Length: 436
Image (cartoon, rainbow, N blue to C red; front, side, top):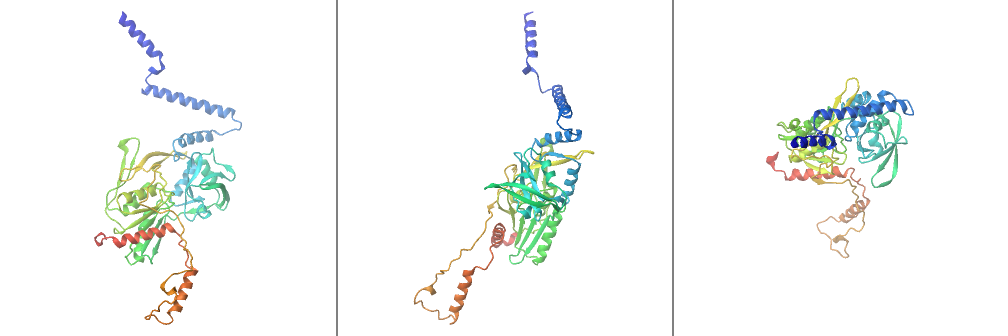
């Protein structure tokens, strides 16, 4: 009898204590979920009934969905029908807008990178800028999609962006004219004087890999098949399609892992490996990156760096090491959610860390220091003449001296690129013949 009473008392205390409930059972989890959904329904009805202005059910539901997704991380969100269509067009390399890649940072819209030859790039907007106002309206409190929608508009119309920039205490106003943005994924140049092939990858869209192949082929043809190496410029490249980043990396690698993606479930881990064939014939490569190089750009830089296939130069990259999946919702646009992190071949995640360059090259401007006092033996009093020199040589020396002090030669336009070419030349000089 005593044992029975003790058991009954124990069960009574157990059932009376909230902490004694097991929250791990499926039934309890479902009950909690239903209670929370009921809370959502109650709030939804209150807003419909009592909000100061009438709001459509569609707006309330879409805003709720977007709030749920955008609260997870800066890259997840809801795409309504129009936004989804714009995204599909953008991956094909042509869309309307300002040509600016943005993300959310502590409630502010942060510029990841302006795209080359677009209104944002021409106006002087830089990676790391914070957009605080759009046409005088504060962006604080807006979702990323809402801010992007405000920046979109009819080509030819003007928009004013207010920017905050590091090292500048004052707000900067930019007036830009919206345009149809036609992204050329790859630009390239044959630098005959240096015998260097320069390949600028602007974005990773559907045509990027084929464009890089054409660039290498044309550069080799332009230099009679004898380039000393290639510069791959990924500065201010905001990323794009994962499969294109893998394919571009594969162009320059003979074997080995390019990147792996790891999601919540270990069995969903994916690894992408290179196939034999290096279209650059193992010639040296220097990859330029900066804080505007993100996502797919970092996959390429990380793969070539880990395999010692290229020297990475410039400044640390942006550090976006996550994978977003677009999931269409029938008749209701799509959701974009972060489904995995990606890792470089050495197993390192660059999320919020970035790719560190092998050789840091900060943006700079070179200026020659003008001076008139050129010291040499010939300037000393009673200096002996050079008997093997023509008599009019001194006059030529004077002309050369005068010309030297005028500094007519223009300063280098791109310090980082010039230094990358120097690095490439140095590698080509000391590269073993068997490596070619």
